[in-house]
Amino acid sequence: KGLVRANCLPKAMELYNEMKQRRGLRPDIITFSMLIKALVEQRDIASAMKVVEDMKGHGDQPDDIIMTHLLEGCRHAHDHELGQKLFDDMMKRGVVPSEFTLVSMLKLHGRCGKHREGYEMVRDWEKLHGSKPSVIHYTCLMSGCIRTKSFDDAWAAYELMRGSRVQPDSTTLTILLPGMVAAQRWEAVAELARAATVGGKASIPAEHLSHAMAQMQASGAPAALMEQLRADMRAAGIAMTARRSLVEGGAVSRPPPGL
Image (tube, rainbow, N blue to C red; front, side, top):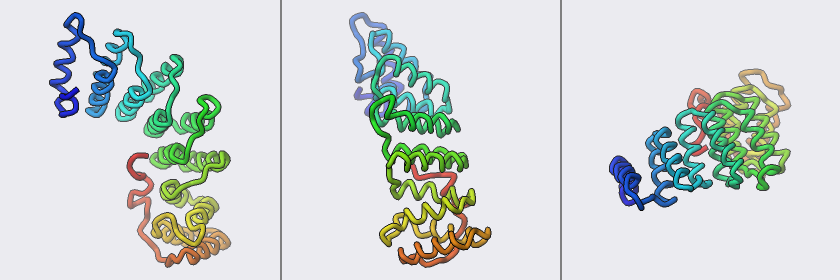
């Protein structure tokens, strides 16, 4: 354990393999978990899975924490099939997934372009697992869609969130608004801008709203929607100046870290 904490993974694996050869010695669940996490962080999902098999051979089963590490490894490896299998096996064993498991699965779906699977997972989560997805989960789902410029899927996720009476936060709006501008979905842009300026204060960077206005003007968006955006910006004290494209600047292709 000390070697893993000291970032000496090769030596830790050497000692681990020696332990396996000695009768009467066996790693505990904490050691297994630490090794798996360290291997995943090194992008070595194959070795992490071998440790999982060793653990099962000792009669231990991966818990929710270990499963979350493994799902992160599958995301890094773009291995959707393995990640889905791990999750399905966990469900068959009766392990109760946590909110962190849901985030990991949504990141996996998003990284691999499986947006429909992500949508259905969030939609059915409360019914199947008893806990209600939060704004973090919905935003994670939208972020994956925006990364691949699947703007219709991102908006469907937003509507699912609102239908579930979950309110968007500033991160949700910061991620979603540039995508709707890029898609030229002006009604959606106006709705998001209003949500971002409620109470006369902007909850997202002003440049996102300025850029939205500039793009609406350039594309000939409906006058009523532009006037609504102007009014919301004025109420929030935002000057209407054109900005560099947020799509070109990376706001669409690279959502904030951690989502």
